[in-house]
Image (cartoon, rainbow, N blue to C red; front, side, top):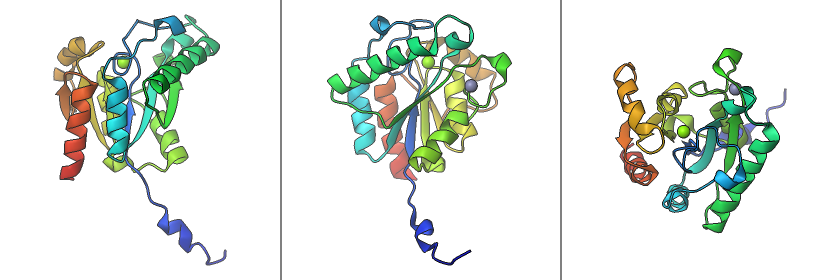
Length: 196
Ligand SMILES: [Mg+2]
Ligand SMILES: [Zn+2]
Protein backbone atom coordinates (compact mmCIF):
# COMPACT_ATOMS: atom_id res chain seq x y z
CA UNK A 1 0.00 0.00 0.00
CA UNK A 2 1.13 3.57 -0.62
CA UNK A 3 2.22 5.85 2.13
CA UNK A 4 0.06 8.83 1.23
CA UNK A 5 -2.46 8.15 3.94
CA UNK A 6 -1.38 10.97 6.24
CA UNK A 7 -4.65 12.80 5.72
CA UNK A 8 -6.53 9.95 7.31
CA UNK A 9 -5.00 10.68 10.69
CA UNK A 10 -6.32 14.23 10.61
CA UNK A 11 -9.95 13.23 10.57
CA UNK A 12 -11.49 14.95 13.56
CA UNK A 13 -14.42 13.42 15.35
CA UNK A 14 -17.33 15.40 16.77
CA UNK A 15 -19.22 14.51 19.95
CA UNK A 16 -22.94 13.92 19.63
CA UNK A 17 -26.05 13.90 21.74
CA UNK A 18 -28.27 10.97 20.84
CA UNK A 19 -31.86 11.83 21.61
CA UNK A 20 -34.72 9.44 22.03
CA UNK A 21 -37.82 10.62 20.10
CA UNK A 22 -41.04 9.64 21.94
CA UNK A 23 -41.37 11.00 25.46
CA UNK A 24 -38.16 13.01 25.07
CA UNK A 25 -38.48 15.37 22.08
CA UNK A 26 -42.16 14.77 21.30
CA UNK A 27 -45.04 13.69 23.52
CA UNK A 28 -45.28 9.92 23.96
CA UNK A 29 -48.47 8.52 22.38
CA UNK A 30 -47.84 4.81 22.98
CA UNK A 31 -46.99 3.36 19.57
CA UNK A 32 -47.45 6.65 17.79
CA UNK A 33 -48.44 5.81 14.22
CA UNK A 34 -49.95 8.90 12.59
CA UNK A 35 -48.34 12.26 11.71
CA UNK A 36 -51.32 13.93 13.40
CA UNK A 37 -50.11 12.63 16.77
CA UNK A 38 -46.70 14.29 16.55
CA UNK A 39 -46.36 17.15 19.02
CA UNK A 40 -43.06 18.69 20.06
CA UNK A 41 -42.37 19.59 23.65
CA UNK A 42 -42.26 23.39 23.92
CA UNK A 43 -38.52 23.37 24.71
CA UNK A 44 -37.53 20.79 22.08
CA UNK A 45 -36.34 23.06 19.28
CA UNK A 46 -34.51 25.41 21.64
CA UNK A 47 -32.74 22.51 23.37
CA UNK A 48 -31.59 21.02 20.06
CA UNK A 49 -30.28 24.41 18.94
CA UNK A 50 -28.40 24.88 22.20
CA UNK A 51 -26.75 21.48 21.87
CA UNK A 52 -25.76 22.13 18.27
CA UNK A 53 -24.44 25.59 19.12
CA UNK A 54 -22.35 23.98 21.86
CA UNK A 55 -20.66 21.83 19.22
CA UNK A 56 -22.63 18.60 19.41
CA UNK A 57 -24.19 16.78 16.53
CA UNK A 58 -27.78 15.95 17.44
CA UNK A 59 -28.95 12.55 16.30
CA UNK A 60 -32.33 10.99 17.06
CA UNK A 61 -32.30 7.24 17.71
CA UNK A 62 -35.67 5.62 18.24
CA UNK A 63 -36.94 2.12 18.98
CA UNK A 64 -40.06 1.58 16.87
CA UNK A 65 -41.15 -1.93 17.77
CA UNK A 66 -44.67 -1.02 16.62
CA UNK A 67 -43.36 -1.98 13.17
CA UNK A 68 -42.17 -5.39 14.38
CA UNK A 69 -45.48 -5.90 16.18
CA UNK A 70 -47.42 -5.17 13.00
CA UNK A 71 -49.10 -2.09 14.48
CA UNK A 72 -47.86 0.20 11.71
CA UNK A 73 -45.65 -0.03 8.64
CA UNK A 74 -42.26 1.50 7.85
CA UNK A 75 -44.19 3.73 5.42
CA UNK A 76 -46.35 5.05 8.28
CA UNK A 77 -43.20 5.54 10.34
CA UNK A 78 -41.61 7.56 7.54
CA UNK A 79 -44.63 9.87 7.46
CA UNK A 80 -44.37 10.36 11.21
CA UNK A 81 -40.64 11.05 11.05
CA UNK A 82 -41.12 13.47 8.15
CA UNK A 83 -43.71 15.36 10.19
CA UNK A 84 -41.34 15.38 13.16
CA UNK A 85 -38.54 16.90 11.08
CA UNK A 86 -40.98 19.34 9.48
CA UNK A 87 -42.19 20.57 12.89
CA UNK A 88 -38.61 21.00 14.09
CA UNK A 89 -37.80 22.98 10.97
CA UNK A 90 -40.87 25.16 11.52
CA UNK A 91 -39.57 25.86 15.02
CA UNK A 92 -36.14 26.75 13.66
CA UNK A 93 -34.29 23.56 14.60
CA UNK A 94 -32.53 20.85 12.66
CA UNK A 95 -31.20 17.45 13.59
CA UNK A 96 -28.10 15.89 12.03
CA UNK A 97 -29.59 12.44 11.62
CA UNK A 98 -32.40 10.07 12.55
CA UNK A 99 -32.16 6.30 12.96
CA UNK A 100 -34.82 3.82 13.96
CA UNK A 101 -35.01 0.17 14.94
CA UNK A 102 -38.18 -1.57 13.68
CA UNK A 103 -37.53 -4.78 15.62
CA UNK A 104 -38.86 -6.42 18.78
CA UNK A 105 -36.72 -8.01 21.51
CA UNK A 106 -37.33 -11.48 20.09
CA UNK A 107 -35.66 -10.48 16.82
CA UNK A 108 -32.38 -10.22 18.77
CA UNK A 109 -31.19 -7.46 16.46
CA UNK A 110 -28.16 -5.30 17.16
CA UNK A 111 -30.00 -1.99 16.84
CA UNK A 112 -32.80 -2.11 19.43
CA UNK A 113 -31.71 0.13 22.31
CA UNK A 114 -29.83 -0.46 24.58
CA UNK A 115 -27.94 -2.26 21.80
CA UNK A 116 -25.58 0.07 20.02
CA UNK A 117 -26.30 -0.61 16.32
CA UNK A 118 -27.90 2.74 15.57
CA UNK A 119 -25.22 4.69 17.43
CA UNK A 120 -22.39 2.81 15.71
CA UNK A 121 -23.97 3.41 12.32
CA UNK A 122 -24.37 7.11 13.11
CA UNK A 123 -20.76 7.28 14.29
CA UNK A 124 -19.66 5.90 10.94
CA UNK A 125 -21.94 8.19 8.94
CA UNK A 126 -21.19 11.38 10.88
CA UNK A 127 -17.67 10.94 12.30
CA UNK A 128 -18.71 10.90 15.95
CA UNK A 129 -16.49 10.85 19.02
CA UNK A 130 -18.48 8.34 21.08
CA UNK A 131 -16.42 8.73 24.24
CA UNK A 132 -17.52 12.34 24.57
CA UNK A 133 -21.09 11.74 23.49
CA UNK A 134 -24.31 11.54 25.49
CA UNK A 135 -27.69 9.88 25.20
CA UNK A 136 -30.96 11.33 26.51
CA UNK A 137 -34.23 9.49 26.90
CA UNK A 138 -37.19 8.58 29.08
CA UNK A 139 -36.30 4.89 29.35
CA UNK A 140 -33.64 2.85 31.13
CA UNK A 141 -32.77 1.59 27.63
CA UNK A 142 -31.83 5.13 26.59
CA UNK A 143 -29.28 5.84 29.27
CA UNK A 144 -27.86 2.31 29.09
CA UNK A 145 -27.28 2.99 25.41
CA UNK A 146 -24.99 5.87 26.36
CA UNK A 147 -23.04 3.61 28.64
CA UNK A 148 -22.93 0.72 26.16
CA UNK A 149 -21.52 2.94 23.45
CA UNK A 150 -18.73 4.37 25.59
CA UNK A 151 -20.36 7.67 26.51
CA UNK A 152 -22.78 8.85 29.18
CA UNK A 153 -26.55 8.55 29.49
CA UNK A 154 -29.17 10.86 30.96
CA UNK A 155 -32.70 9.87 31.99
CA UNK A 156 -35.51 12.41 31.63
CA UNK A 157 -38.75 12.34 33.62
CA UNK A 158 -41.08 13.17 30.73
CA UNK A 159 -42.88 10.38 28.83
CA UNK A 160 -42.36 7.10 30.69
CA UNK A 161 -39.50 8.56 32.71
CA UNK A 162 -41.19 8.72 36.10
CA UNK A 163 -42.10 5.02 35.94
CA UNK A 164 -38.57 4.17 34.87
CA UNK A 165 -36.99 5.66 38.00
CA UNK A 166 -38.05 2.52 39.92
CA UNK A 167 -36.34 0.33 37.33
CA UNK A 168 -33.11 2.31 37.66
CA UNK A 169 -32.82 1.01 41.23
CA UNK A 170 -32.47 -2.55 39.92
CA UNK A 171 -29.84 -1.62 37.34
CA UNK A 172 -26.15 -1.95 38.06
CA UNK A 173 -25.41 0.97 35.78
CA UNK A 174 -26.91 4.31 36.78
CA UNK A 175 -27.55 7.36 34.61
CA UNK A 176 -25.16 10.30 34.71
CA UNK A 177 -28.18 12.26 35.92
CA UNK A 178 -31.96 12.18 36.12
CA UNK A 179 -33.34 15.40 34.64
CA UNK A 180 -36.85 16.79 34.65
CA UNK A 181 -36.96 17.41 30.90
CA UNK A 182 -34.77 17.62 27.81
CA UNK A 183 -34.33 21.29 28.61
CA UNK A 184 -32.65 20.43 31.91
CA UNK A 185 -30.69 17.60 30.33
CA UNK A 186 -29.34 20.06 27.77
CA UNK A 187 -27.99 22.37 30.45
CA UNK A 188 -26.51 19.45 32.36
CA UNK A 189 -24.75 18.06 29.28
CA UNK A 190 -23.31 21.40 28.20
CA UNK A 191 -21.91 21.90 31.71
CA UNK A 192 -20.63 18.34 32.00
CA UNK A 193 -18.84 18.62 28.66
CA UNK A 194 -17.00 21.73 29.87
CA UNK A 195 -15.59 19.75 32.79
CA UNK A 196 -14.08 17.00 30.66
MG1 LIG B 1 -39.03 7.24 24.71
ZN1 LIG C 1 -33.27 -3.49 15.52
